[in-house]
Image 1: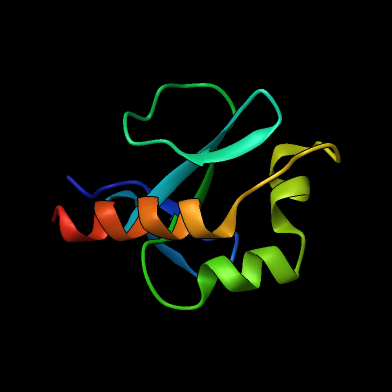
Image 2: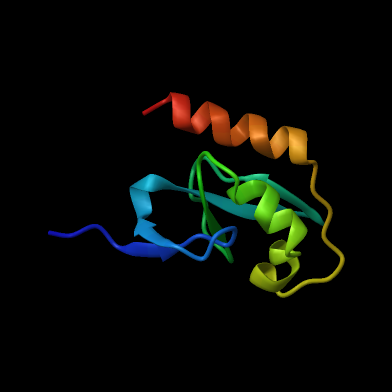
Length: 87
């Protein structure tokens, strides 16, 4: 059986769910969702320039349909790196 595909909010490319990291919001802060805990989520490639593209394009606000979001690029990068290293 094929794994479901998701779209990266950074580059717009499609990939299997296992190749992407899920992001979610906690309060008003965007975090890496390591447990896929449900609710509205957004997907992003684990490495490369996708995080910077998402920040530049304001993709988090669009993906989560909220304009009051905050994010810390350094902590998001660390979370994505941690997930990528765990494969």
